Image (cartoon, rainbow, N blue to C red; front, side, top):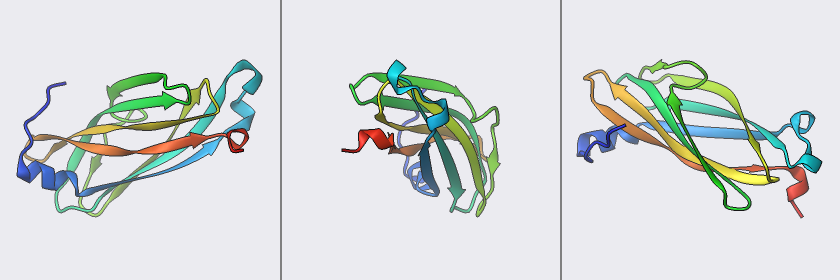
Length: 135
């Protein structure tokens, strides 16, 4: 994936997407004695701008409590490359296994606007924390 130079127009467009997350520890899929902690998360991507853009790919940076980093890249999200029109939201559910009882996720969505211009939207860091991790 090539990096585009920062342009004021695209930078302004990047701020026209709001990313919100909710997370949950999935006890039934976890096995702490085997160092498997399973987390579900819901992402909402809201286009608060005035133009349509298509989500083409994602880049996740997943960090566990020991500082181990895993990067995941791929097309779209959950098998889709949604077009998100002005004022609309796209929501999806996914999951992440960790080897520790806590960690975090952050990353970027790669979009293409109606003029064919590429830009990235940052996914703010959010935390995955099993109830047993809280002392």
